[in-house]
Image (cartoon, rainbow, N blue to C red; front, side, top):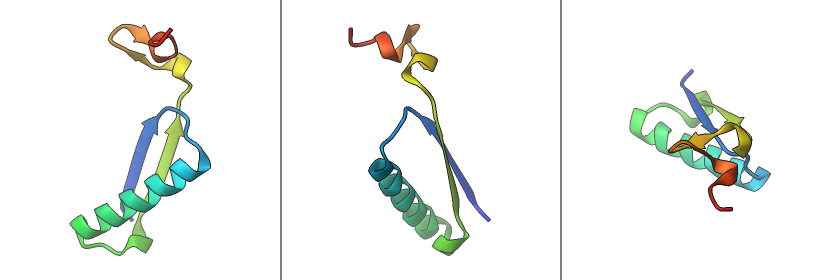
Length: 62
């Protein structure tokens, strides 16, 4: 079973649903593997736990 792992900021249920559907459909087409074979894992990280360019994401737009 192919596995897709996504790590990022928290998402709404609708965003997760769309992300899983689009990633699965695209990967299935590219890899020529049935969509039913894919597993998608979403790991959410608080904006306080992500730094970009030496600054916490939670503090970037303050």
